Length: 365
Image (cartoon, rainbow, N blue to C red; front, top):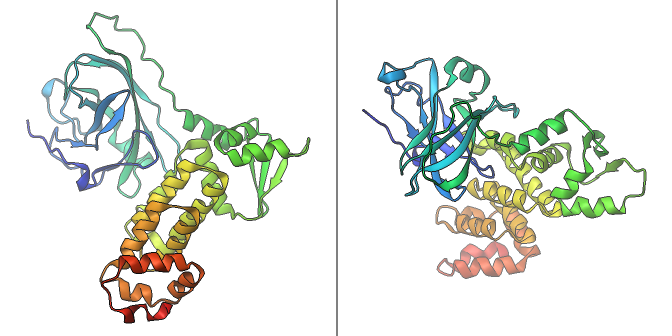
């Protein structure tokens, strides 16, 4: 049997930051693979065991026959050195607008390390291409729950249904989209978002404190310092704990997907800090750090310094200290203005670059 085992470095299956057990799979580059070849996802921990996902673009047919060309196959693979692990598992596909396929669920066991369980005919290619493939890729969300660790295998009736696997974030998002049982309206520049006080308060200490001080009977809350685009991203995160729509745009390979999107993430980072959404703040910091450019490094450095984003600050300093960047970085007007406002940044930057001639620092004297 011929197998292709490609790692994450080939960008065929990449984990989606901020989402547990969710992966972006490159459908376009794998659809013509040899029969029963597969690609393997990065490893991840779940329920105390290490797992990965196997994706078969052209799974072998039943009983070892020819390729089942109408379907693709998806499996969990146990990577921990364990035996007879009983587990409930589920897969579903997520579209660009967060619509999801019906979950395919399975209750089975993994007898040993490298054993796999899943679906040889997970979904028809035609349905996958028409409903879930975008820019040559699709998003797979999966869940696995170990039922009772390692166990002595016993015979079980075949008709026992799989335990349901929760998808809380998608249920909450559907609740928001349908505007069901909303009890607060958020007004951003005249754009109204119906929402739920309980969810906003549970997610954000800022809203929790704010709602306790609102006079009785107040149902509309106007926030003046936000734009609708930024609040849309933040509200989506509070209900789903994901940044999926922004990430799909951000990962498109077209010169960092424009400075406009980068600036949007910077503004979301500021709001996440103000709303005390620490997880969203970390996600935004990672996004910015991975897409630093000469056009954005100064604004990101200022933001990182003011919001105490240490990782982002370190990345900005490293970028500005590269030999191919240092002259342009230090000679820009925005750099000079930034260093005048924050002399401590200037001192730290110079301490990192003591081997450069003093003339390169003339703009900041």
